[in-house]
Length: 337
Length: 160
Image (tube, rainbow over the protein chains, first blue to last red):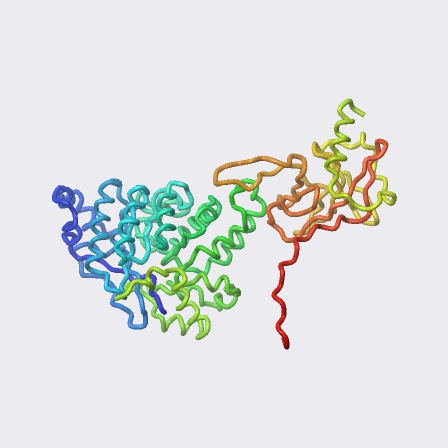
């Protein structure tokens, strides 16, 4: 079974989302002060699909048996200052995803609010009972993912068997509240895009060293759209530092790479960064490393197709990577048309 | 010998690393009173460099080469360590029973030579010590590490 773990979908009219909210919240969101921030903001990367623009939902890939749908507009709540409004907005967005995008082969994610883990845990349990969602999308809020702040979300993920998908929204490194990039605020969208992989490395390191992977062994994480060529060197570095500083993190009871190689996955986009100069063959030398990579097209944003995976990784490794998604996303596989 | 010495010696015997063979061929290291707390003394025992130290927990002897990159463990530091714990909890223990490598800080048990927490596959050599009549003696042979019992293998089928 081939699962595309990263196909983007979007709404073109904000009223489609607001229709799921009660009238008072609709009136709140319809004010210029809110809509202006959503419809006129143009400084995002990969979130240029403002409400009112042409749709940017990706066409379904014929080669994929199942497709995990990522609504990037909903992810941008990590740049919102008003956390209460964000939960209302996401509640509407998740309902819209259930009614409009779920079709059996197309499986939406539950988007949660990183600033409100209590609400998020309840939303996960409520939506999981609807049996149309395949995973949980956790936008990158102010705190690194290893902190106990997120424990209620991880408890709900473990309970429901839903994997947690981490995908940047585009406001990281720019808005206060969303996670910053290294060094400071970069001046252009392209700089931020180049450096997004820092967020995945930071949060995987946090999950390992803060003991979250030890505490929640059943929770699976997919870092989506961050590339993957950096994984082998990260694992070497976290193990190296753990050997010296195990004293400071005695709750990490095994080499941190062991946890990552069991509970964390990355998807293939952008595929070429890992195949240039033979990096894939040189660094992804073990079955354990190769098992971490799953297919994600990232379409329609310069996405890769399954054929690209076969072409660039070869028939054996390509087929392996295309089939890896089933272990990560059993709930996606189980959703039937 | 200080007033506290008898009790320290008693503690020493209680914490003797591993009961080993006869101590008749143990080699003389130094007088116990000449040992400075937590300072290694490099000596040649059985043709090898051995690092001997007196700590709050006893007298110990280890091989001088770190299994990682062969740093001289006689330059190591005497410490305790943090036992495995729940998230954000610290439980300090084994004070005076741990040595850290001077280059990378890797922790080893002075009692067994094993890497703390399984951080390294390699281990230090550990040597049995005896304190007799106020003098310290060291075994010329490394203590054989205890190995976990081998997992039972399924019986082979006929013809295999």
